[in-house]
Image 1: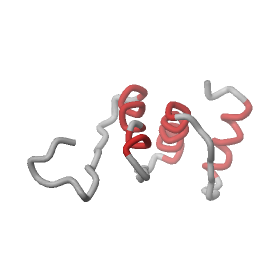
Image 2 (image 1 turned 90 degrees about the vertical axis):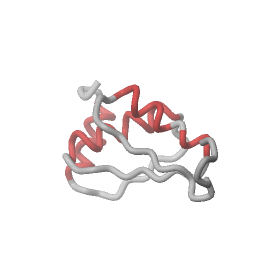
Image 3 (image 1 turned 180 degrees about the horizontal axis):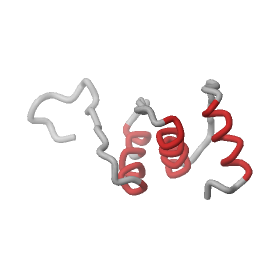
Length: 83
């Protein structure tokens, strides 16, 4: 996958530490781009989502990597409430 020209362009942009903005992506491509960023930058990546639908990104990330991931619940969640 990393041999695709579009992925190579992304990797080069990541190496330059350029600010990148991706819009209109489905959930799985978001996860793949996030993991590629993590692999090539060798830094931690923080992903903040705007709602429950975007929160499904955690499931996709878990599918594509064996690295330990953290998910923090919404601030409105009360102790004992189901998430």
